[in-house]
Length: 292
Image (tube, rainbow, N blue to C red; front, side, top):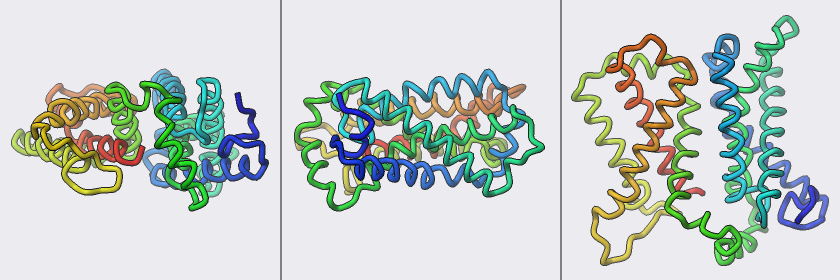
């Protein structure tokens, strides 16, 4: 079991500890800025239902632990280390979110404690995911060797977690949640849903699925998945893309409910709003499979 000092790459070097913290903070800032500069999120801190906010925060904890097991601040060798990385990511996200909101004068002395907590808590969820993504995406050239080692031996350490079908679905859920949190609070989602007809909704579903499938299998992005030559074209579509889109829709529905976008809304408009939000959700789900 490593200590807090091996926060970087599993060594006792304090410099690696600082580098790991810096990467996490950079990731939290980079991936959290869109929400930190969104007016709807500032306002939502006042009136979001506290029970729904608490549920979102609780859901984020096991999500971070599982994500840390995959791409934590270091190559984890046990669940305790993954928990440590998840807690660190959450703490960094809270600090970064509060600091940026203070910088933008959105947190002020006259605000109630409930409003301050609400504002920071909402922002900390995507920022905490970004803090963990910072380790995977913001590594310097000197770390490439350790990444290669992870590619070769990481599967044995994380067991079936890294290669199982459920893990693929989990990564897609993370990607959908992260991107949905960036756009779901905006009024444009509801406006687009009201403007769309049934034909537009059907077209949106089809285009979302095609984009999602193309990102992973058709377009030669780094990290894209290649199918064996004898695999039928529909195999990946049925096994991964369509279930992934269903995951994106479920996450979209949950996020809309959390932000109160579905309250006192007819079922048809609920469906329309979910389809609209599933468009970026599907892209986020596909991107997660590529970068994670």
